[in-house]
Each structure stands twice: as C-alpha cells, then as structure tokens.
Amino acid sequence: MKTSLQSRREFIKLSSIAAAAAPLLGASMLRAQSAASAPGRKIGFAVCGLGNLSTHQIAPALQKTQFCQLTGIVTGHPAKADQWKAQYNISDKNVYNYDNMEDMANNPDIDVVYVVTPNGLHAEHTIKAARAGKHVLSEKPMEATVEKCQQMIDECHKAGKQLAIGYRLHFEPTNLECIRLGREKVFGDLKMIEAGFGGHQGNPNVWRFDKKLAGGGPLMDMGIYALQSTRYLSGEEPTEVSGITTVTDPEWFKEIEESIVWDMKFPSGLIARCASTYKFSGMARFKVYADNGWYELNPAFGYGGIHGTRSDGQPIEFPQIDQFAAEMDDFAQCILENRPTRVPGEEGLRDVKIMLAIYESARTGKIVKV
Ligand code: NAD
Image (cartoon, rainbow, N blue to C red; front, side, top):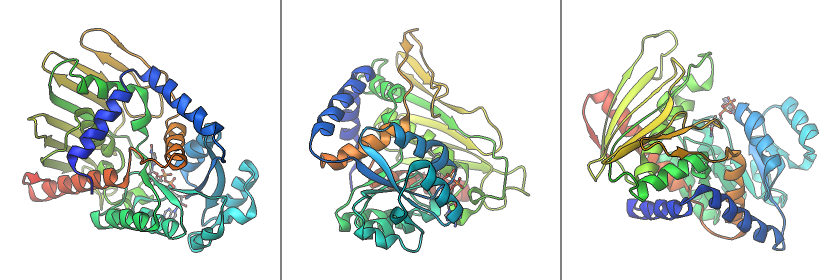
C-alpha cells in the first residue's frame, strides 16, 4: 500500500506537470504522438454497465480518444446490447453479460474493462475482469467497504494488471492549476478549505438510495469530489474527521443520509469544512484560504463550465476538455508505456476509508481518527 508520503510525491509530480496547464496539454499531446507512432494498436475498452454515465459520457468520450477504442460491452440487457452494437459497430463476439465475463480471457480485442455499474458491484465486476486478464478502470467511489477495495487491488495485482479509479478531475487543467497554486505556495501556506458538491435527486427508486448497492448516500456519490479536492489541493491526508448527517424527508431517505457536513484536520494544521446533499442543487465548489489570499473554483466539479477566481484578480482560465477522454487516454498510455496510473486503486481505497470514518463520526457523535 502507498504511504501518504508517496502520494504527496505523486501530487508534487502532478503539480510540476501542472505548472502551466496549457503546456500540460501540449506535453500530453507529444507523448500521445510518440506512443501513437510506436508500433501497436489502440487499447480496446469494454464498457461494463450501460447506464447513464456510460451512454451519455463514456461512449461519446471514447470516440474522441487517441489511444482507445470501444471494442466491447458487458450488459444484462439484450436490447441495450443491440443498440450499442449498431451505434458503435461492436461485433457479436465482443458482447458479454455479467455471468460470462471470464470468457473475455480469450478475447484479444479487449484490454481494459471500464466498470460503470452501481458502487457495491465494482468489486465483483473488477475481480471478474482481472481474472480474465484485463486491466480495470473502475468508476468512483471504488466500492462500499474497505475489504472490497482491498480485494480489487489484490486481484488486479495477482493478475499483473493495472487498476485505476475514474477520478476525472486529476486530468482537468483548471483543477490542476489550483493544485499548482497550493504546491508552489503562490498565496502562502494553506489554512482552510471549504468544499461542497451535491444535487437534487429526483427519484428515490434507484440503486443510489439502496445502501447495499450505493455504500452510502450523497457523500459516497458526490461528496467524494469535495473530499478528493481537499486531498489533491493540499497534498495531505486528513488525520481526524467529524460528520453530521440529516434527514428531513424520511419517506425518501430510509437507508442513506439526505445531507451531510463534515470537518477534517490535516497534519500541517490545515482544516477543511465540506458538505454534500441529495436534497438541493447549486453546491459544486471549493475555496482555498491561504496566508496571503484565496482562490476558488465555482463550479469546480462538473464535466464542463469550471470557473476560477483568485483574490489577486488574476484569471484562472484553461481550455475545457472532455475529462473522460483525457482519463481514458491517460490510462491507455500507462498501459502502452508500462507506467503506473496517477489514480490507482490505493487512491480509491483512501477515500473509502475516510468516508467510512466520517459516517462513523456521524453515527457516534465523536471525532474519528483516520
Ligand atoms: P445508472 O443507474 O445509470 O447505471 C448503472 C448500470 O449498471 C445500468 O446499466 C444497470 O443496468 C447496471 N446494473 C448492473 N447490475 C445492476 C444492479 N444489480 N442494480 C442496478 N443496476 C445494475 O448509474 P450511473 O449514473 O451510470 O452510475 C454508474 C457508476 O458511475 C456509479 O459507480 C457512479 O458513482 C459512477 N458515476 C461517475 C460519474 C463521474 O463523473 N465520474 C458520474 C456519474 C456516475
């Protein structure tokens, strides 16, 4: 398992890459071109779970990638399989269901399985893919429990395959610039971060309201972005957390929290105050307060429209990119060049550990050490 020091080093590496995000794009283009000109082929992706995210973001993004191609699908719905086969020219032999994923072992068209099923099924599908000898990109949150996250890491390790978590903002230039501002202490030492991400959920009859499949409520689904931001902005790991949850609509929120606020303390003395909700929309931001000023992204976490402001009036402006295409191209290049992903399973596991500590605090009313 990686130590927080290692993870800090990764972030420092990341920030040096992010020293200016426009060159970052240029550098990644260059790397892209050299890998593309290397003998070889594009990395074949099979999308596992053809729901909203796969349909509206991942499949369209795959069409924009340089190093990936959509070669396969895993679905329990024959009608969806027919639609995807026709739309994306996927051959019959590359269509799987959740029960025959092991047959992928004999299919060289598929290098990566992108797991986009409900959170509490990520381990099951990751393990099947790893045992079939495939690399895995799993959506966030990594899983519902620490044990299942560890199993995912262990199985991919045993198979000699890479495991990445779908943390798309690690590839987004505006967020990367805010990492640079912190690492280079442009405004001095960071003192406090406020971060929140939530949204009104319009239908309680979906897996997101089922604790077993979701692992938790808005914290696991959207609050994870606020938590992630405090970690990548500071490069530090929280040492203690406290949380408060609320439910004002017990008819809808029988198993999960409706809204949550939580505080965290970091080794340098930095503190963070965060929030998430399924009850209302409009919260999607972070703000970083440092010794000599502040900077914020509002909104910070969406697929586009990310907007930054600095206390000194200088702009935070970078091109809006397709974050899913960037995330998948990076993973493909990691595989092609045999180098580790910057968003490994260990990173997903750390978030799950912290979120479960926040829930424990909310349940017990006590501060929990992480
Ligand atoms: P969704 O409900 O739209 O899709 C889930 C898919 O899983 C469906 O195709 C469904 O048929 C399939 N599935 C398989 N077994 C199932 C079962 N037992 N119960 C319910 N569905 C089952 O969900 P989504 O919004 O596409 O989210 C999928 C994953 O992607 C989640 O882990 C979520 O957290 C993540 N996600 C990430 C982002 C992001 O920005 N990275 C955005 C949205 C969702």
